[in-house]
Image 1 (cartoon, rainbow, N blue to C red):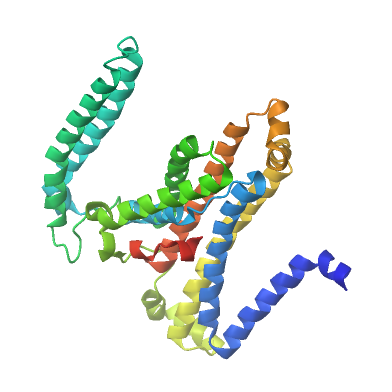
Image 2: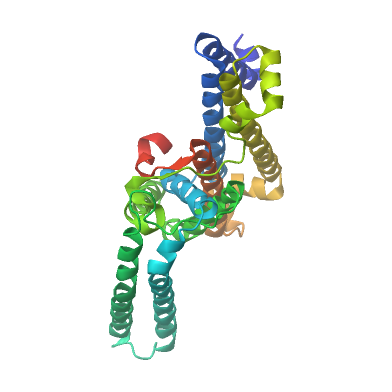
Length: 350
């Protein structure tokens, strides 16, 4: 019996999960079962991202919520329409502040490399550049933020987004998470696994703190509601003649049928994404690169002795896994139809 279970364990577990979903559909309603199914599909994508990091390379990342939140932020910045009044009131100050920030960073890097001979004054010069840059930033950035957040704060009070289809936010969320993962990886991947876990958790908390408090960008704790959908709205389906006839043929109330139809559409989208990710994941795992990553995971010292750049490979895996988590975060925000920064907490996403 044990050998039979070991051979068909995955099939048994998937069958058990399917049975539980069917039981929920019978006892409660098919709509509830489909809601749980969609959340399970998104959780599966998020788990796949974590598995890429932990299973491929043994990287212990507990900052999952930060990367998921970046995916959710992408949903807002890509899909929500721009708030023209906010851009007119404070958009120039925000853009100028961002340019000053970039200019300060570039100036520090250039100064650091060009004044190596001034060892005694090097740190003072860098500190001076930072102080000047920070002062200019606050001079232009703060008035812009105040002006933006004063524009109808109960409804908008932020810059809005690009007004593009929300499906485009999914790869953008992956890119956001990958970019932050690159920065984190360059800083923290040289640490031991337990210190890496602490570092990722701390940085993810910083990300959440930023998202909660920068209302000009995310509306903070006021939430962003009414995100566009990649699937039809229930009210539109209920008013469509073809859908009314279809629901009547199935013997279902139109409102119940519309809710189920929308959730089935979401499920099909999520299943398609899972299929693509699983194909890439399995292909990579069976490739020479995948065998190298397993060797690094099992014995980093031996892999390094064979000429493998362990730190660089860890960074690549960390970025890939974080990108998948960011993708799942954008999909979760799409399913919810709203962006709620206060909902991101370690107990939910780690």
